[in-house]
Image (cartoon, rainbow, N blue to C red; front, side, top):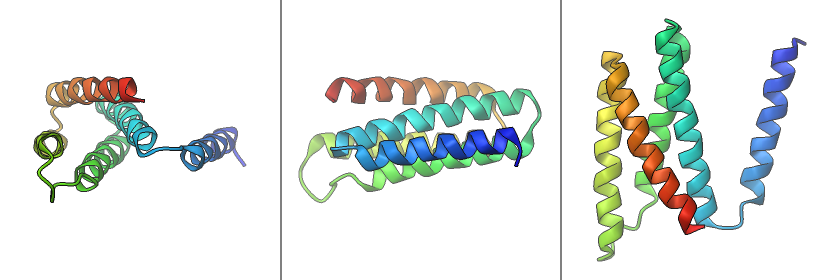
Length: 126
């Protein structure tokens, strides 16, 4: 087995352990934002390096995370924050889909900045 393959498997096990040991929904949401930001950085690097497959996979995975974050919100109640976050996540997801389809590095960088701000905000909630 290649060294990189072993390293990837080891990293995946560490990530699985982090998720399994998370004690609150806030920790899980924070981890999702961390992962989405890593994926967007990877997408930007892949775009610069003309690695189409890595770009597509990273951007799509980040999009899936944003959509997942949107769907776990309690929008059935009158919770104004949940409704505001739902609208924010919807806008980010639509922008990311468009940026991915158009391979727009500037737009992806802007989306990264928005997600990173949200990520930092969630870190303060912990």
